[in-house]
Image (cartoon, rainbow, N blue to C red; front, side, top):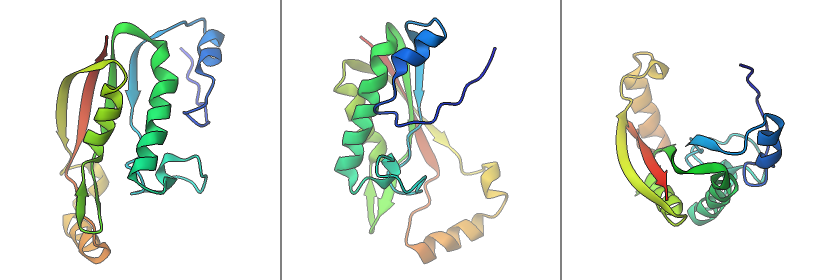
Length: 154
């Protein structure tokens, strides 16, 4: 098996051509792990979801990504969304549930929500107090979970 990394705008990427190159018409599983809006900037590009001006624009952009990929998922198969929430200006923003609604608008049924606790991840390397300090200084909330949402295509 050969792996291929494709860099592009997921809203407009020609997925059909990519799949045809590998003699694939449809897929059985989609997994998406979009940025949590602007928590971490991944680039300076205006088409990058992490650079959306506000939550509404982020959700519109995310919806276009979903629209671009879902035609290639077989009926009755599964779509997994991994996403968390956002805390900004003293307000908890349920970004995960906003994104869940974007998927539900597109002929999917929600099968399950798994809450993944990552309090003890390797990324923190036993530096909980450093993370707590950074949160207090930066005025943000340390999330200790993210959602794994499982949808089924009708």
